[in-house]
Image (spheres, one colour):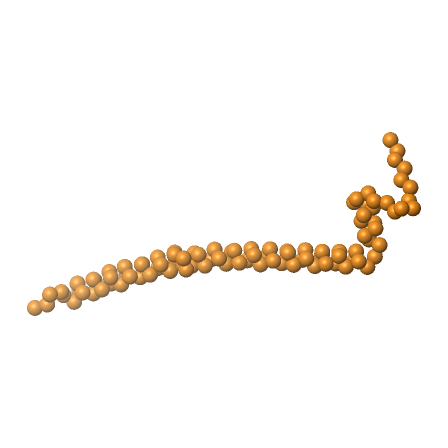
Length: 96
C-alpha cells in the first residue's frame, strides 16, 4: 500500500519545481541585484561615460585656449574686446 501513487508524486514534484522556478525568475529579474536593475545601471554607466567624454573634450579645448593665451598677444585682444580696456597710449573717442 502506497500513500502517494507514482503519478501523484510526479504531479506534486512538477508543481513544486515550477513554483520554485517561478520564484527564482522573480528574484532574478527584480530586486536590488536583478537583471532589470543591472540594465538600468548599464544605461547610467553609458550616460556617465558620455558625460566624461564631453568633459574631456572641453578640458582639452580649454587647455588649448590657455596655452594660446600665454603664447600670443591674445590676452590683450581679449581684454580689449570683452572688457573694453585700452592701452595707456591709446585715445578713445566716444561718439554720441
